[in-house]
Length: 426
Image 1 (cartoon, one colour):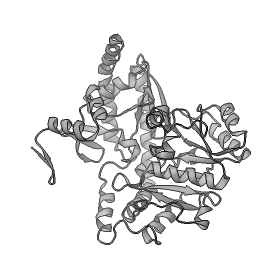
Image 2 (cartoon, helix red, strand yellow; image 1 turned 90 degrees about the vertical axis):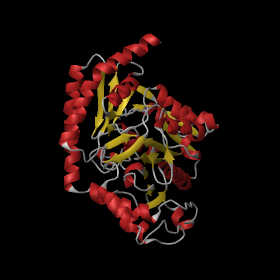
Image 3 (cartoon, one colour; image 1 turned 90 degrees about the horizontal axis):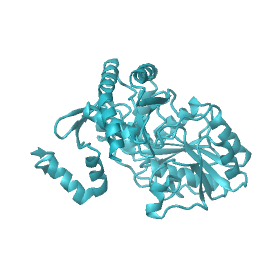
């Protein structure tokens, strides 16, 4: 019996059956078909435990949500203490918690002037797009082919066809997509002079972390300035020290007009997101501060946890650890490629953002399963299944880094077996 207090399940099988019946049939069945029967139960630090008690090292981190690990003790204590005084708050009035977090975010984000809060990344993207439209009085939005910026009404329209067509959200006359690392295509889209914003992740996550070519992001910003288009940096997965800088755009030396952050902002303890605006794009806050309303956006409890998160990320020991873990996996993966080069063909890396490339079209799916069987959870990129998303946490210890690499090495024979079995089956 699995007793969680307010609810219980007689077995893992019963829970999965009810997940199919009441929650999400296709997603639940998808993982079963992939040979991954994970139902996360206990979680702590960089470990997650299946309902059957099996331990996994988490290198998915839910897109970087758990950068500090699951249920980080400092963040948990911060939330518990906040509950003695605060709740969500009231979005209509000035707030001590929202103001404190807004000030902290602006202080670590050069060029930004205002912070507007949401409950999740998609809402922050919505605020960004609306703010760009306000500033430019234009409607069109340019994004990257195979990009991803959320699933809400405006944000989903910037993403891949997989996410737009099912809900009839594709609007090719308003939402234009161009290939990543293709400046000519971008200029062709912008030169008409009717585009409100270019939005892209600094390193596109769902696409498998392809790295920007040298000078590409700076050239994108230059083109935006040339044609009066706002540059929106989506930092939901690349921000919060994951590149070795607080924000990914800082590591490339560019200055966005707008940026969005979410996921890791509160370490998975309380949902919150933020859209940071410069003076021009935040002009609507002077004209009509209630033009965007979010009852749960910027909930005061979340603001207090996020404030603590920013403080932790700025500690010298945290920054030093990010660089140490970065170098460990840079060297370690180079060695793994020497040992398993027949299937493991490339590494895309910027700080703690890594995309591991494999020889087969769905090679990362096989590797994900092999790692799962060897006690590590890392997910393949849904829009490029050759690539495994590899997301080490910012507080990983040397001992755990070593264990991860040993488990990776041990999983490769099984990954090879699965890759070639899948190829024969086709």
